[in-house]
Image (cartoon, rainbow, N blue to C red; front, side, top):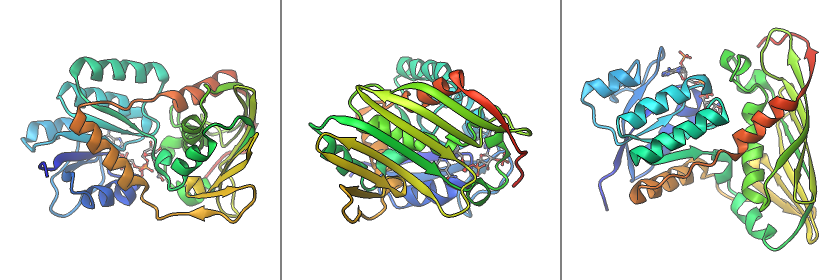
Length: 309
Ligand code: NAP
């Protein structure tokens, strides 16, 4: 077996600790070389820095970085990593804007550096089986309901509510990443409506209408759901109805009891990244970010009550 890739995590917050660290430590293909966080602590025994620049100047060897900061600073960090010749895994959303992402992709291409848009929900347990079931069927209609409590899942994350933080589209983009993985035709946003708290720059609730081929998909995103999470995507086809629930971890066909499998979302994601590194290739899909940007362009905006954690 080839020696593991040395990887550094940049932005050592919730997702880095909850998912990236266990996935890296559990993989034979990666070694955790360092962590970087602007303020917070690292891990015992792992070199920790305050900036990517400080890591690059330290002499600690890294082949790749996983950028797990808030999205507003991701592009600048990714550009710096690419310039240093490091492969880059981008947590979702991969950049602040589609234009910023296109520039990043071009930069990585010119530098010959692998770039990976890590749409983690595409690696949820039942998404692959859902895609296989859909093959050869025509989607007629769809529904996305992605509702969770910002107070429960994102306390203290002020960046979510600032420009570029996406608000309710931060979880909602996960649904869009699954949808764009499942549907063979391009997806287009035809209407959107946002509720924006008076003290925030980003929506706390949103509805959208999407079209793909002849199918119309109704989307309901909400960050004020206090009765448990609803992470559902339903597609009605000419051959039955598919319901992905639990964010892609459970699959039901035509109302049958849901099937599920062991959660290996981030382990599979890192296995895919290792494959990309082996082959020196990128997997850089901007489609979900494009849908969010389009929704922001045409949104009818209504004011909402101020939001506080
Ligand atoms: P978080 O808990 O706020 O963590 C982000 C970390 O990045 C914080 O420790 C922050 O430090 C640090 N940071 C900010 N600017 C930095 C910089 N310039 N250099 C180095 N570190 C910097 O947020 P999170 O929940 O982990 O989410 C991070 C990203 O992962 C988001 O894009 C999110 O959409 C995505 N994600 C989150 C989840 C989830 O369940 N939470 C799931 C999947 C993906 P300070 O707090 O000191 O600024």
